[in-house]
Length: 247
Length: 393
Ligand SMILES: Nc1ncnc2c1ncn2[C@@H]1O[C@H](COP(=O)(O)OP(=O)(O)OP(=O)(O)O)[C@@H](O)[C@H]1O
Ligand SMILES: [Mg+2]
Image (cartoon, rainbow over all chains, first blue to last red; front, side, top):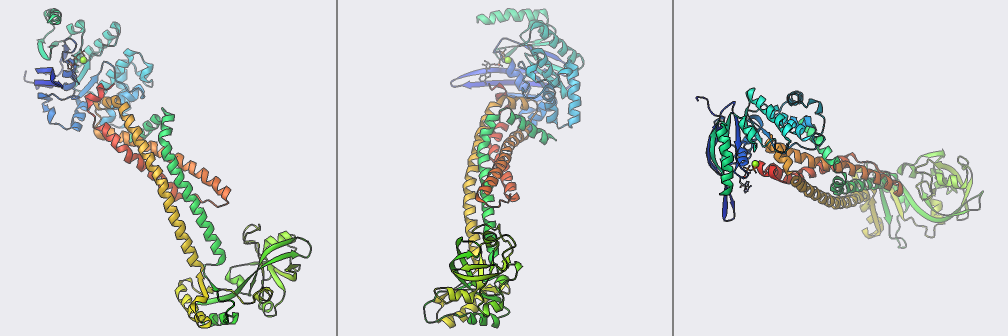
């Protein structure tokens, strides 16, 4: 590929020191994500998926290694420059939605646009557009607590979309939803991807992994598989999970 | 626009926890209220003092002779001579004799203990008195020692009916005096106000007093700016007449007023300092609650940061919130202070002028306190690490 990667991890380590012992949440991870990809990260609990995602999202910094986002070395940026990258380049979808309870849905979706410094009228326009795309435009004046979990997750997707980011990062977005609603959310993310959005998704759900173009499997801070979701990979992963459990 | 939105948000946050916000503001409310109350009451008192002195005449100098009983006197003629010889310094001069007398009208049997003042015909000009009915005392009354008097509206209304006093007689220590004039009302005609007064020729007063020498003179300066020269001329002449500068005192109304004003000013400063301490305590209360708020809203800060909020966005949000809390506290304090001052003014019978300066100052100080004491917690919030803030439970 001659295109430059959007996300480029080179030998990334994240080590938590807890007194004498240390936890290697990421233990030398390298991979690249290109524009338009749909990457699913799987792995058992505590394997380092969220840690990886937080570093991609510039919310956390690696202990060692280089992370290039759109070719820029993130570790060389100031806090405010990283904030600007989060605002312009990244869109987050969290498992717990992370909407601000005191603001209504519209104001929540407007937040990233406000931090972009857009005019109020443009903020409203783009936020409503995003709410329409996720199908809850009629609920714009509701507080998050007045919506169902699925609706709240749609609102948080709208918020991630509103700023038209280059990459959408979703850490177990369906973790708190029932299977029907989570299927809807995943379907929506797949549609977004087909429209050209780059998506990186963490999930425990193998059926979701099966629908991705590319699966990265993390085990104990290391990548153990990176490739298309062949049945093989999924099955192997389940088998491995059982094996891992006995280790 | 973003700013008004931040303020609106801050208001919502205040309203969402009314009791806590109120308790946070209490220090500011009390501090600002105290400043307003103290400043308005002190201003009222100052105004009252100044008014009282303006009644005396700001150009006046009082000469008190303390050598009574000794062999030397200052006669009215001596004083008139000094005045006549220095027309560029002095305009008028009157002797002053106060008698404590019983006063009674010819138509009622009621007795009143009262102060009767013996003066000459220039007294009304010296003390800016206006005669409303009849006339003031004249040279001939003084010269011929006529038993005539001019009264204030208090006596007109107590002894007679309004407008019916002219030509009537009152008895002062048993001596009948004809009322030739009634003064214009200066206060409200009540007892102990400046409307309770009786003026008679000093020549008669001197004869009626137990000691016929004159103890005090009031002199009017041509120009208040020449106070020092005027005083030194009086000193020179009086020392010559009395033989020593120990036998008289010269006091200018101006000087007393200046002194009083400086005392009041010092008191005001001291009281405002005390109120300032309660503002400081209020500020610390705000800082405390803002620190708690930052901890409570760590997750919100994390979410905002994940969406691209920069340090200055978070900083502004929390500083504006603190300033709004203290600003609202300031406004409540101003209202509280104004209400209390007005009530106090009514009770103390002082005209309370709401001081725009005090209100503006109190409001700016309270907002400034919010900014200053909100800054540290806001800075803490702005410096939070996004992932730690997001993970905070
Ligand atoms: N702040 C921290 N301090 C110490 N250890 C941490 C911290 N954050 C994560 N870890 C450790 O790092 C490892 C990876 O955690 P991470 O959250 O990335 O797991 P995960 O793969 O997302 O798990 P899950 O599927 O349960 O969400 C875990 O062992 C965890 O205990
Ligand atoms: Mg996780």
